[in-house]
Image 1 (tube, helix red, strand yellow):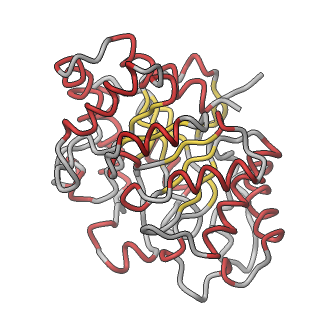
Image 2: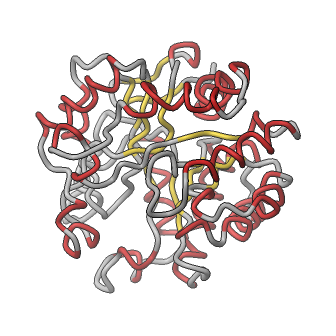
Image 3: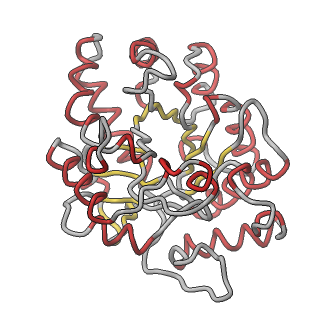
Amino acid sequence: MKTVKTVFGPISPEEVGFTDIHDHVWKSGGMEVREDKDFGIENIGKSRDELIRYKKAGGNTLVDMQPIGVGRGINEMKEIAKDTGVNLVAITGFHRGSLYDKAHFVYKYTEDQIFNMVLSEVESGIEENDFCGPFVKHSDVLPGLVKCGSGYYKITPLEEMLIRIAGRVSAKTDIPIGTHTHVGTMGYEQARLLLDAGARPERIMIGHLDRNADFLMHKKVLDLGVYVQYDCVARVKYHPVSDTMDLIKRLSDLGYANRIMIGGDWGRASYLQSYGGEPGFEFIPKYFPDMMREYGISDEVINRIFIENPKEFLAY
């Protein structure tokens, strides 16, 4: 039977409920934090409070999208999720290449070696120290998703290898894939690489795509049979929320509602209420469904995007 893997073990897909498909409860260390301390999300108590706010607002499941080597902390995530009532999902895989220092092992090991490392997390549990050595210690947490990513308008040779690895791992285990596109670029190219590596389209979610709110490009990606993930739900520094609403409405009217999911991606301390920021994890469950209704999006589509799609996508 397919299950959804959480930090406290597998659950039935029926237990998933309202889902934020892309967010961050813990981020300590790594290139992002080194370059901008606002990316640091490093207080267990504050992050737990943020999850509790999410739960009180109607949220039920949240996917922490921090992969290997950029601040992931599996033991901290377990502590954060304890007693919150939230199904917290942790992940494996890698981010875009520029977030890895040239001394990192991704630049030194072969594709097959890194493939076997990622596969070991899917089969044996997330490694507690992100394989930074010298010893390997697998936790009891199985990842719920494998991540890959690329930079702005380019996929480097390293990124192509890591994308291919994600596709191979998914093809072997059926684990779902979530990607990072930089400012919504290279989504179609990512999907093609993953499909060529053997991943099934319904196992693939192309991330951040509404940061490039090009309707025809989104339709082209969706026509491959993959999911798209939107997260410009309150960050007008990218574009007005109406752009994302228009994408959801137009694509849903054409029958693509079964391939759209939404995350907050509140990956900075200044986005989280418990850290003194705004709007926080609670924003999506508390406000976004009503906003969607104001734009003429039906309850059927809202339920499909926040509950049914994540339930189907995350189960493997």
